[in-house]
Length: 85
Picture 1 (cartoon, helix red, strand yellow):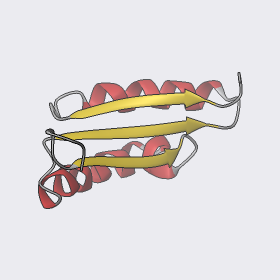
Picture 2: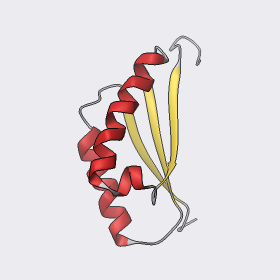
Picture 3: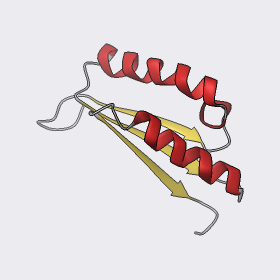
Picture 4: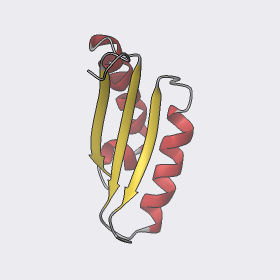
């Protein structure tokens, strides 16, 4: 819970997770994310993805993830690139 905002859902994943890389699993996980938001009564959510391997295919999958999940208004999809730190 955060101040006057109320509950905030935070989901953490590694970029090489199949629920991001595999299109069918990514689509199925989208349903879960919506359920998590509703179940936690969160008006705001953050899906934070950590890039720990340099792989162009992973970067492309992240862009696909952002496009596919952009219709979830309460969700912000962000990436932290640990390879360039």
